Image (cartoon, rainbow, N blue to C red; front, side, top):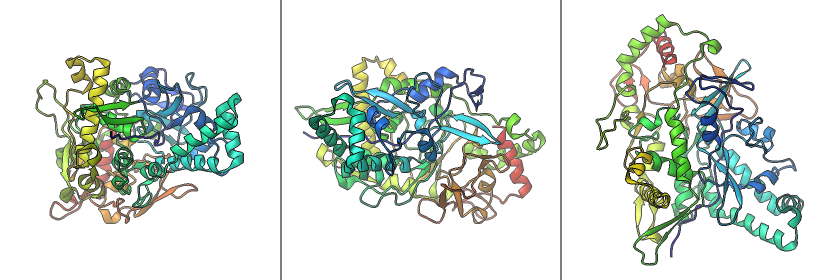
Length: 547
């Protein structure tokens, strides 16, 4: 018998504050919510509905101390350093967990776990002159890798420090503290800290965090491959060398292909892969005859569908003139003409032909690496990576094919368990087949709400819209991530150094800020349009604010 065990390892979470009470936008607490088509109900589902992901048992997480002190790890002032946003006013959150943490109960054991929602990596909060502004579906600004490392480092220190272990055991076990129960707890902690699992999170035998992601970035595909296939065979582990921004979600359900490299077609497969990547209890095992793959998984495809339905309602945030200043409409009109001339061929491509179900989708324009000229690591890494699935009788497969097979098996098993009709299956699939690919290209999309998604390019290597319109040699070579303070002039986040900031250095592998350039010369090798004057740059920026 063979099996893949995806352990209770997870990424960190983007948190959010109190929820709005009107779909028309407004304030809740001290946070401004823009009109994105969501109200309280949609936010609570997106922030709290369990996908079946499991970081740690909830009792463990609440009892865990910081590695270097006896202070509670989950305290708001501690998690804030990773840019989580506290959620103090929610009635369904007595422990004051950050938004994005969801409870999930193991049906076999009754153990309550804490895991992550889709809102983990796709909720943003920015600030301007003391006002906090929520961007639902926006790219998170959290440092996932640092937070995840800190959780398991704290757990490891607890296991190895008698005083810490005693306090932890008393908090977790309560009145059932005895020698046998503490011994069993130690065994559970040791299992959670197995080296191969930590390698899967930290980047594998090739070296932990070979290219450090920092705030707002993650090599999600690389880590998902480690988490899925690293335990099957440690040789499947790879260093995480291709960090990318979290993509924003508005309009995502309407596209034919998603992800920065345009690798996934079907919404359900995309969401299953996302859940796997942030830590589920999943086993793939053969039946007795070896002719069928049996799936045992904590993944909640019913809630994945529910979350997807909320994202289908989500609209791009409009530029809040009452906060950032009025848009110069005459300047924006000139910018619109420039956009139609230089940008629309990629960023306004239209719709696909109707598919077999009569459905049409927004086209994802794929720009080959030798044309767009941006850092190739993210696309190349996924294209070249393989997984040895010999233990499953499948040999060595490309990563795209391996993930297609795994997500298909989970989907089929769960659909059968729910007794879905053929039409329900098609609806849950978004009327698209489960197809994966690994092109040497990056995906362009429409730019509505682009003002709210800095930094730019797939790897977050350009801090503002203004710099994105500059030739690469004039872009910042080093800047600092971690601030949530918005810059409405250049349209980006502030990038000056401060204590606790992450320095992004663009000459390191995976971090290049080259490509997508407007400068004179032959097209290709990163040149996509003619040189712009400074006046034209500001006109384009003013137009992009209107989208």
